[in-house]
Length: 62
Image (tube, rainbow, N blue to C red; front, side, top):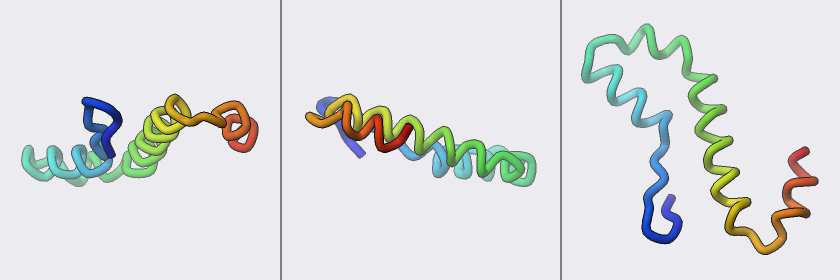
């Protein structure tokens, strides 16, 4: 996902790749749900920051 001049990476994919490359995939997999939730939160905040109807979307999520 991109916004303007920056790229928003999926931290779920980045953490999985990094853990596998470094040899500790089992340890990181214990945090998959937490990493996924944080990833979704960061993406939602980026989308809300650019949305014309951000106040309405914020009420929907709250």
